Length: 378
Image 1 (cartoon, one colour):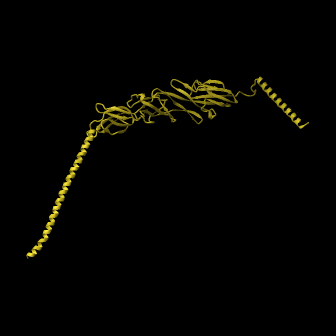
Image 2: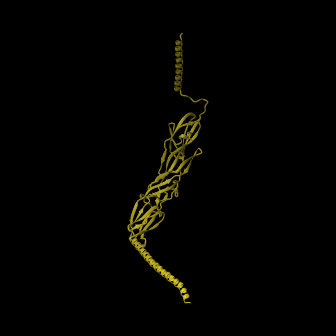
Image 3: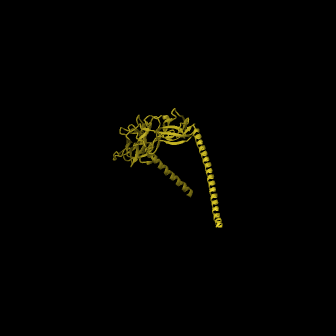
């Protein structure tokens, strides 16, 4: 027999053995499928229970496990029981939020789900059923919060004047609160520590209430907890600014109106009243620039409004310029007259000095001649 014929024969024999083996396997599987598998006569039942717990306890939450759906009881518990096995199982939270009239709940995370990468998913896969254990579904509790915005006197602030109301949570997140109406805020949040879930009350602090481009509150000074206070009161700081003007020299009222630049850069021109004054109430605290319209050259005043303030602007009017000009002219004339008087005095002093010098010189010459004449007489 040639070598090629032996190889062909060997391949045929091998193919026959493989076909026979596959036939035996298929026949065995078919027989097993046709005859139901009975429990082992010497093996005791081994039930395994998976308990799903909600924190805080939330009743009537639907939970799905391997095709079966259960609802949590009044204690927030749902259970699934199977015989011990090594198959992977799937757990799914069907109700991820629960809405009520006075509170809402939203799913945050799992605990005890084995795989840490699935802690924040609503569906968890690969769960075992080899020993009984508990999986926790943690919810955050939200409450409706309706802040009240008032001034220092307790009067309500016009919502149209307010552009932003901003608060900060315990985690540092900034949230914008509607000026009117309410907002749902987390009041109780789950905290994962030491492989267990705890609950913590959330706290918020007021950061800003913007009116005309300036913050009217002190950031972080007012705080509240939605669990305890669902109608916090925010006090915005508003003050009164009064403006008047007078001329520099005579202190008479000056100007027609006050020009006030607000913190947001807007310019407001307000005429003076019968008492030559402008009074603006309810101005938000912040930087302002005050000047005068008409009446001369005003001096601009910059100020930080943090209390009730009165500003009296000095103005250089035409009368002031005329008075100053006359004063300067009088001073110049006086200096000129004084200068001429001094010049004349100097001339008199110089003339008297010259005369004194000439008289002394003459006397000296006369004294020198007298001894010579006396000697001749003797």
